Length: 71
Image (tube, rainbow, N blue to C red; front, side, top):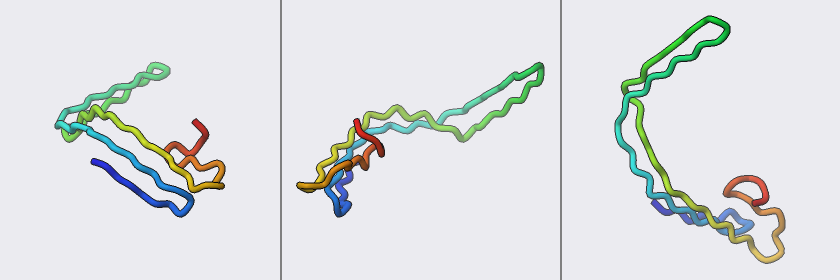
């Protein structure tokens, strides 16, 4: 999936090729001798490759929409 957005201060292009598959997840936590656990039969497994490109307009500074902070 590819997206191309104009934010007013510049353009952001991102692409992902994630693959989503059904899964069942089980978790248990033990803290100070107490335990809790749960299972979610509707979980998913999703390996993802992703990138984002920030192209600010000329003169725009501190433009970081992909991650919100300077890279």
